[in-house]
Length: 508
Image 1 (cartoon, rainbow, N blue to C red):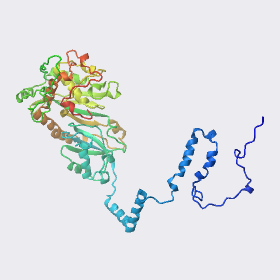
Image 2: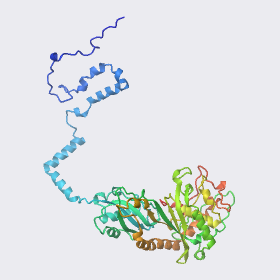
Image 3: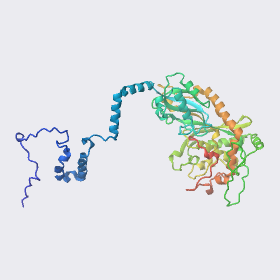
Image 4: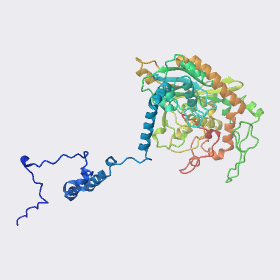
């Protein structure tokens, strides 16, 4: 059977020889439109609609047709003017009015006069110290009094930050090597940023605009990619602790079995006290005088040192922070050393200086490590409890007060080796004398003064003892084992917070 020849409509367009080509008259219409004003896409639509494009376009066929139809509505085809209320019309009218009044050149001249000369910024590392009392922490936060907030204002006033960058701290790329939170001090911390350093007295001028409890020791020019947080190798923290916290724990108040703990607001608490209910015993001045007579003996000091040494190495510290699970790899932290000094007498009270050198720290970690050792010594719990805390079972460990904690200094050993041939090393050693004087006057003296005035560490212990049943301290026992009853089950909330649980310190 013979196949019928295709019709003229279905056949390919007739190809004319070049000699027979018909010359079409030139059109005066704009490109893409016919003389009648319709677009080329609209003119040829019937032919495209008629063709069977499914064979080679597939599922894109309808999309192509939609694009062709949309071309008809393109606003570039508009022939009438913009509406009087449209933004384009308003902008055009405003520009015409300014041009007629000669305002354009005047405004440009005013802007040039008001704009300060551009002074180059340099990437530097600021070496600083501060007393955290009265501040909500190191890192700048909206509507909060912070160390970085006051530092940025002082830099603007001293001309170290230009007016163009004064509206946003992010414009100078500020980053700190360790973020401390409410009430935590720093004898040494490093802040990296871009700063104007043309003035040789820039550090003095910034200090003149800072409160006395924040001091800049100096600065070091760094490579442009320097970041104080990511290039910091490790951090050294110090914790000051009065030795009377290691006195044996007194007998806890007995409560009938099955009776729920009650809370009665404490109305006659001393001014400045953080105790909030009658379960917390407030020590009398006579009782505090007796406690401050305590002197730690060699055997107890050896146990303290052994306990802190048990934290050294790489361990899973999930029980020493909040919001972390055992299987979270971020809980694995490396503690290089954790040492306790010889006791030192300060204003009638014996103190220990604890120093921990670690690669990095989690939220609350140092304060919880200190808190656990204090409770263990008070209850004669053996040191073998500490390795048990690195296992999967979750227990409730209260934090020690923020008052005694301070960042001693961050370290940048790897960075210093890398830039030894091109840049000055990032080191606090040239400022040791100045740092020690600042630490004695604004940090140590502040810690001692607040402890003597408010008995912060005794109050912390009284809060723990008064709410021992809520905190579930069954892991404090003679065997150093964590019993089933002390484990926090999934979905079970932790105890009501003591003072030390209300505050937080970002890096420890």
